[in-house]
Length: 51
Image (cartoon, rainbow, N blue to C red; front, top):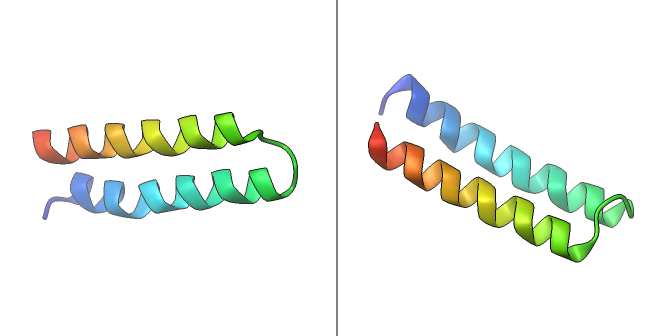
């Protein structure tokens, strides 16, 4: 596993957790959380497979 792939493995869950925390604090709406999670997963999968 390359350094870039390892970074994706670490950063993607951090983004998801942050989005969920912001939702619980009332900063993000459910649609924003869903979009953030789906986009971060899509980007991570795309970049992970391209490496």
